[in-house]
Image 1 (cartoon, rainbow, N blue to C red):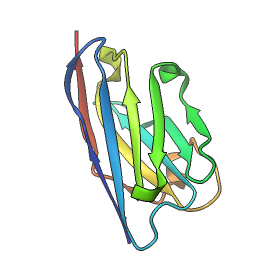
Image 2: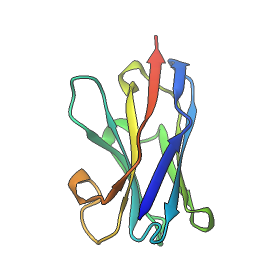
Image 3: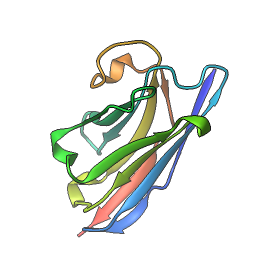
Length: 124
């Protein structure tokens, strides 16, 4: 019932910036939170950032604090991830996801709907 579409990925040199977008559509939209996760080749999917949809409270992985900023536009049902000072280790497929029910922001198993992912590649 909810469809998520990410955009904004690409190939960027180290130190550069990208702004990822996640547009949600459907009958339910976002209820509790939107999160961003990433998965590098051969690695497990890991938490990046999340935002409470009504409160605006933000949560970040230690590895991205100070460089990434998560935000949302409730009226547009769209979330954003501004990523600055990119490092080669940020290279991954980035996924947005929405969480309908109260729970752990950091746990990907608690998110209900997922986008197709957008590739971010950072060259050195």
